[in-house]
Length: 429
Ligand SMILES: C[S@@+](CC[C@H](N)C(=O)[O-])C[C@H]1O[C@@H](n2cnc3c(N)ncnc32)[C@H](O)[C@@H]1O
Image (cartoon, rainbow, N blue to C red; front, top):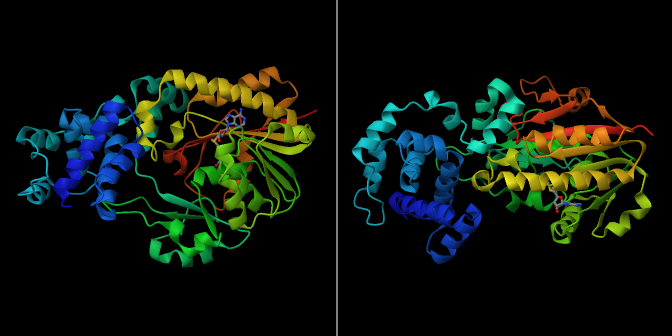
């Protein structure tokens, strides 16, 4: 396919996402199924245009003075694809599958409007109802923090220290463009895409099959690390899902002690078995029945609650979710978080830790939940995350979370990670 056909396909996918309020991945998959002739290169470019358009729907629309999918998709070509209008017009010329060229008045407007001077509510590229949530957490910096959530993300990898060190993984992935990641000596980063490039499929690498690394955002790696799990401890990962944190904890604990991985949704837990095997983890067992946890009551050195949340910290990777999220969904997540915390506390032993994590940046899911928990549970107190952070990160770095009331808030702007919230509590008696 030529650029014109790819652009037209991206416009159709964007319209489908908008009209049917469906996830981008579903719309792209359906398009692929009904256009089997399209190759991997075509799909990558179409996917890039769609994801970039969703990341910066408001600011691209402002520069084009239109929220039509066609105009926003052209905006992606003129910004993220690093093409100028002459390049685009030449590429589209004589292509019967291409959309109509961009109108001259839009081209002129695009040249006149400087994105850096867009009003904050446009530059932030988030739904209007979310703005007060960003303001409450980040104050004056709210628009910069929100805007950084529409950057393209890197692919971060966690070196599995049970099997390898960073040099080994870097060597294995040299062709994939892997570099040392900031902050952690056990993390590797494939930088964000440039122009219309394609990320290497690191999971197809023999080093992945051999369990030398896992794909995991640096923020998620740091969140697992701040719990400060030690070799020999008894740990319950109460919302284990597919086991991203469980695997990180097992490596942190050098395969010693015991990790119990539980999730209320059996299907979510399913991938954990293969992952544990591949990673060479010997100190973790998965539980799909809450009844299995009975013997663990008041026995755990640490209970990790990686709570269900809105995922507002992960909008770089899931920009369609940003526009689908509603305040009703936020309220539902808050209820679930209260219930999960309330259930998980039963397993913490006196002197043990309760680690509460979300990948959201909204206070009602984060600091407010912790404050309400502390108000209702006087036997718990806050362990300051700042010294834990200093101990966890490898070297002096310009990246530093926002520390608030003993908790840590990570974000693309402050720590070059997805947005994460981490609070560590101690059960005193
Ligand atoms: C953020 S995800 C976990 C991600 C996982 N820890 C990882 O690092 O890959 C939240 C998980 O909480 C689970 N969950 C939701 N409600 C729960 C409950 N009441 N008890 C236990 N798990 C629950 C969901 O099924 C989901 O898998």
